[in-house]
Length: 152
Image (cartoon, rainbow, N blue to C red):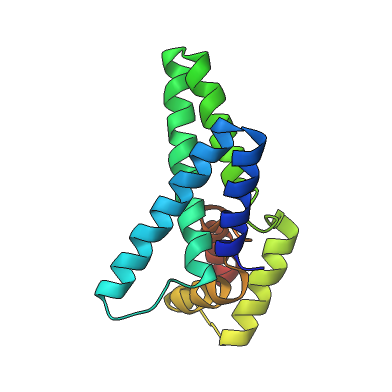
């Protein structure tokens, strides 16, 4: 089942269960997806691929994390709970995130596959990782590892 179908099914389930918080987050996802599709159509492309949907979800999680941090600093427990619930729903649609050792293995494989020899080849390595492991790697954590492995 594609992610798009999963979103639609999840919306129906949330409506039947009366889960308003989950339904609200799912509708946010669908609205963002529709915006991305419209943007792609304007560039002469079709619906965005699964990898782009994963990237969109990761961006939404990052925004939710920023909202969570702001709410914690402001001492707003109700907003903290809402942000945590949104992050949980968004995360449920992403593949399991790689641990540090798995990530190192994937980076080493990408370096070998691309024939990267130094820092100037970092873009090739990151592109290979995005093609194979979109959604499973947090590129904010992976970037320093790629630099470390290319330098060493």
